[in-house]
Image (cartoon, rainbow over all chains, first blue to last red; front, side, top):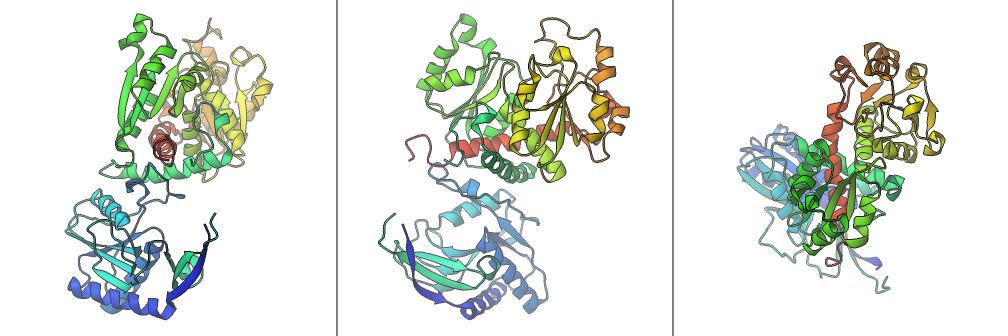
Length: 184
Length: 312
């Protein structure tokens, strides 16, 4: 099935502003950066988490630790499909007692976040888990919501939301793709 | 299906891409094995049968730990406490297991070809845990993993496999495995422990260990399988140790980056001296550690994805 670009809903500046706002909101909600640690979900979530940590450091002068989560082994559909590429999880801080902010690019069904919460819990008992996403596209299948959202983008299920980040894709943008009707 | 073959019965079932995928995936599982909580929910509800007709400590335990860490239900079958002692054939045992709907079978048997026979009567993926003097592919994969961890690469490594080549299923899998990843296997041993046609194995052949030692990145010592040899293949253990045993002097003759490996269990004082076995250049316990991660990767890759009919 082929896809064509339907719309670009965020450009580089919009993403930049959204991340800056989210960094402020995280600090406001947690009254500073004291007990926070970020955990980016592979792969775009890790880039976002790194950028958020840079901003938090600029605002507050505090370095917050950043980890990366690969949730392939925690997914509920392992029997149906495997992740094309499995990365190594790296949580270089003590989870016990911290506020963990999960960071992902797109929030959709909520199943990835469910798996990420299970993955974090295997490292210890955090005092709280919060969720920051760049795009919330709706269509939740689990009772999960984001604490910090860059942009709410209403979508149809047959559409795809793609977040492009300079680290992996050469430029920053959020685009919506739709089925081009060409079939396979 | 992510791997090119449904079963892993011999190294022929895997191509270079499969091997790379298994080793890369195993790296992620190594990280899990360092955690305080070493359990993943990945294969919840799957049943993995360990069908062991021959004694085994590390292979069986390694598969069992791997299945437990992935939350699969592991069932152990030991020949001595089963209907096998009442004369049930392998084929009938396999049919019985198939009727119980297990998802994967690991088999070790003293006859070569036992895994192929199981595959004929069962639908689930079969993994060879060692068949006779034929192959032991998961051992070869964990050895490759250990070498890759030590050197950061496999291509171009010179690996000397020393000792009881003709009775060794480990060599049977390791030689083709090394060839597939671009390393150079060299088999070394006394003529009485070489197969009748060593040249067709696909390895370089040498009879003098001391001559090749300075060129080896890895010296892989095989256990002398006294239980499989029809008669004593050399005059005495002492003579074997003098000619082919690894000792501190031989370790010093290897390049300084060179490592020593052994599939276990060891005959200390025969193929390897105790001080070499316990030296920092011995990777023997690293191999055991790699075994769990590599077997977790194999289970994940073989049982995940759109396999087993129903899920697809």
